[in-house]
Image 1 (cartoon, rainbow, N blue to C red):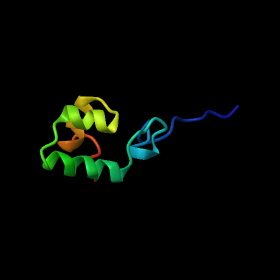
Image 2: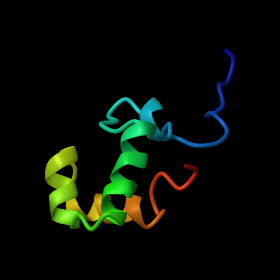
Image 3: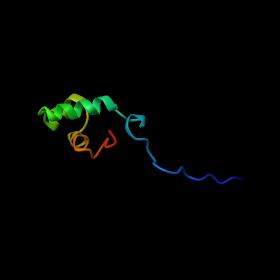
Amino acid sequence: REVTRPPVGRRFKRGEENHAAILTPELVVKMRQLREQGWSYSKLSDEFLIDRKHAWRICNYEAWSWL
């Protein structure tokens, strides 16, 4: 019987490659542009159907930081 090893690297795929992803790179860029134009995190979260904290993390490059 052959022993299989767990995959090396990340457990979950990043960004839109994740099976539960709602956003695309284009939407992330658009969200950051709207934030620069003065949109609130609450308004962004309503527009993009995500949590307010996640909108904050995206706009502050804690999430989707590779874009």
